[in-house]
Image (cartoon, rainbow, N blue to C red; front, top):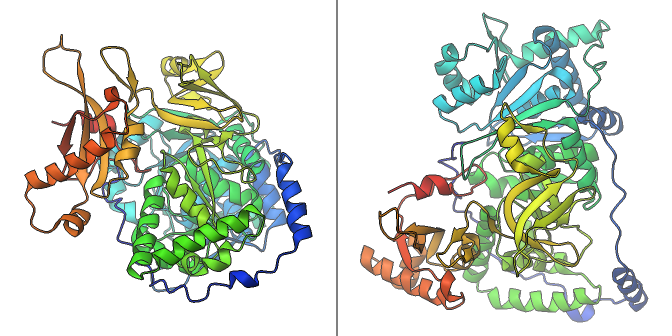
Length: 618
């Protein structure tokens, strides 16, 4: 699907770091008996937590409504100036039942319902209503241009579109081009039914009246765990989007699997900053905390991330590497400007030594840094792309547990995850979740090959495309297209995408992601993409030149090398830096050519570069 053109990381501003309240290390009270006990416990192999055993999301819904009725569920700001408004599980549950009761009177069974909106209470409400029996949810990227939104609605043969006020004009422009749609439902609107248009609050009001009069039809719907319930069109970083068919079993299996590796509590609060039409955020950022009685605070937008973190005080956040990298950079820049970098590095070393003997005072020592992120963050999960291991280590150095997840839309999405109780392996994307089998197909001498996945989270198949479904299934395993290896402890290391692989004339395989991670450490480079470029237009010429397309970090270049530099001078500075990286690579992997890019890379909403689009650009 389409890129998010305006998804640019803003210039975060953090308070000056003073580090005046560091506890006196010499006065740390050490209970050596407890230290010994903790060390013995640590040396024992930790078993996964007792996992949940849900079969459908409706089971989760019924359980959470009963157990956590008075708990806050969704925190949403009415506007930037007002404080967060809390919606409880009870409020949410009543709205789901009311909306579902009304919708099943209007929609045919298994009607496809497109949900297009920014992250808002109305999105969560619409999605859960579909999962509990009102229809098939079709979550759509809110950044799609009109023609692509029209295409997705028509491909899905949608009967209804639920949209936010921000998408009203877009929906209006295509209304006459989407003939299957009988209902246009606006979120957070009280409008009565006029022709095909109506407000969601009106439907909830009507549904409530039905429920109060004894209508239990919605809650009486039994969900088949194998029934097609969600249709998600993939981002398509390497090809055109496919429709992935997800069932309740897939989503419930994600909750069960993750619960064995990570413990969430009713006191936990997740911070929602990623787009909800991706299964990463909708499953792990919503359905998982929902099953645990936790709450979710909605980020108003990337430019408000710091004040929103400080106001909502979350305990966990799902993120993509680009976001974590920028938080890391901005916090460290603030530390340097405060001239506290030497002290911070020293305290990282000291607290690491103490932690090694089971004395953890990191959250006290780095309280001021953690307060910039709200003060309560205990877990950050990175997924969607590789991240530099040093950043993962830094996150843990300041007292936050750093986890990595791996999966695809086709696995709804989690296939592997770092167990929070295992020693950290910062270069790994975790190990296969409980109930899932991941193997390396046809490994090379380094143990690398395509990762194949089998388990209950694997999709039903591609929508209206049996051929494409057959292509990605092999002996019951889903062929991920990702290249990786698995160590003796079961930890997975992703080295590239099979579709991105550059094959040299002498048969060597080069995975561009490996080179991109190294180039990403160069301060003068904002972003880059490595690919194999043909040396000539001659079809007979098979030789590929390892080429790096680079967007310079002009701000950093000015800071380090001076103002008013010409394009040639900038190219020379970057090329010299690239040559230093080449020294760390085997000769056949070395970058032979660079291309300077002044505009932004085209990206998906999880901020992956759309390679096939970029490579086809002249």
